[in-house]
Length: 88
Image: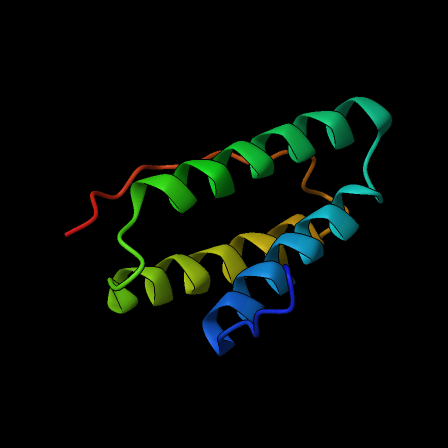
């Protein structure tokens, strides 16, 4: 990151991303690949599509992501899907 300090919210986002990647390791190789691709594309889409100053929406996405991560950690869950909520 070039020596720049990360904000608390940025740290939360990175922690959530790492959590998804760790959880994906516990799934089958095919599902792991699907999950990693899905998570990377969702994070990339939100990184470019959400205003960095829209803290309320970012906090919403973090809460939703944490719920999805908790669900993904369940042995019965094998994949993720997403509903798109419009950013306001």
